[in-house]
Image 1 (cartoon, rainbow, N blue to C red):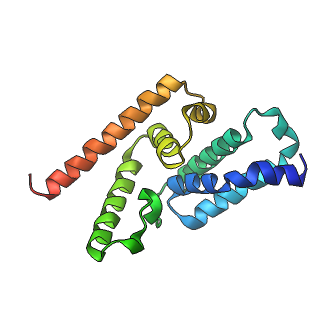
Image 2 (cartoon, rainbow, N blue to C red; image 1 turned 30 degrees about the horizontal axis):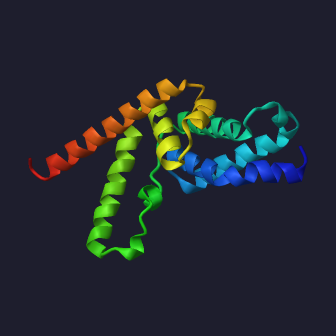
Image 3 (spheres, helix red, strand yellow; image 1 turned 90 degrees about the vertical axis):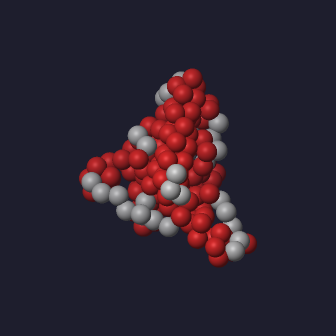
Length: 172
């Protein structure tokens, strides 16, 4: 694989890989470092990439594994600026609503962090990165039925915990 083909196949997925790294590492600089490591590994092994059915799936798997390794090595989580988690343009809303959205974002990040890694990964790939079930199957090696169950459980757990916190805060 030459530089031109590498650029065509790998560079378009850089944004997804970065957001995935940021999901796990919760730190922009560490996510950038992880992305650079993945890109370097892909470039170093570019001659073997043609053997893979989906280079994107390989890159996502490498990113996930590298991030999990870094988390184990550091044994800590850092919080990053994830205001785009809900995809809301904050400049178009009132200051009160902006605070509300920021609080909701922060709560959702906390609740997502509490999910098991597998649920967190599947939820992120499906709802944030908008991967198809087939793409998630390639990345994770799970069957589509398992993915649907994991996704359903992750969403239900997030919903229940979100409502529990909000009900508690409102005094009910």
